[in-house]
Image (tube, rainbow, N blue to C red; front, side, top):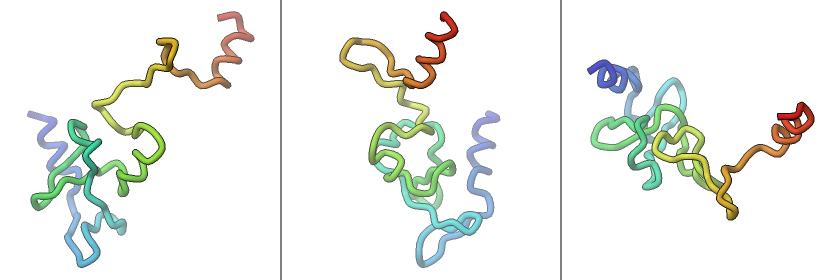
Length: 96
């Protein structure tokens, strides 16, 4: 029940303008299809918005959105989870 209260207040103070939904001085764009299933999506006046990022289409342009709650880390061709190469080299230097 507490989650519903958080979702209702996620866009508190937002108002619909001629440009779109205005929230804290930022124009919010509606979510894209890839956002379906994400727990962060909030409905405001029959349209769905992401309170975490104003332009969800840009977040999905190059890869997976880092705010997405319904997608897990990608797996490469060898079946291993992708790891940041810089972090991997540091771990190897420490002997992990």
